[in-house]
Length: 207
Image (cartoon, rainbow, N blue to C red; front, top):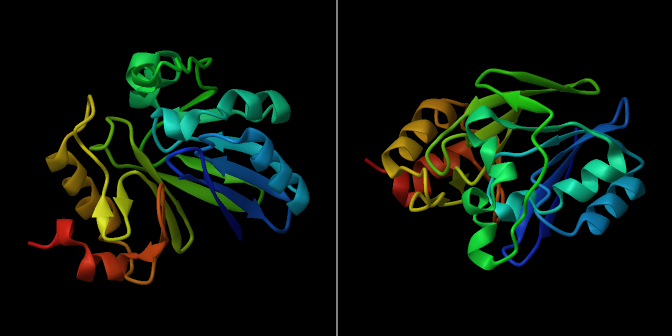
């Protein structure tokens, strides 16, 4: 599996290009900004985008969706409980900045346990609410893309509308900390880590 990390936008949200080397199919996860840069990297890698997947609906993770959708024709996917965030600037928080990101509805609404095929890769949807009601992580083999649920030695904010710190911590403990310690985590902001490291070092996860 090919994993390319592109921090994009003012908040440097991690946009991930996940590629299947056998088929040259790719998923783009959380294209928050800089669509041309993302598309240039996809072209450089010789990949064809077959899915645009959003771990949640905040503006810094969805800002380049419209341009990428237009350029690739790939279906846009988000959890059902965050679906309205694509079409309502007040919910995706862009209205707070006066930008008003208003997108078309998603092509596919995801649920916990759904499987997304990208070439020969299978991405499993883990519903991890708390940062947003429809926040998800994506498990691919021994890797998991955690969006704004879990970071290296931190966790996602829960003070935005629809957030809940208790729900967030429960999601992490029930869906992520049960994974093997050597599972790599690729978060929505900042560096990668492992489940084992977060069990030991993350101050928010210590009993």
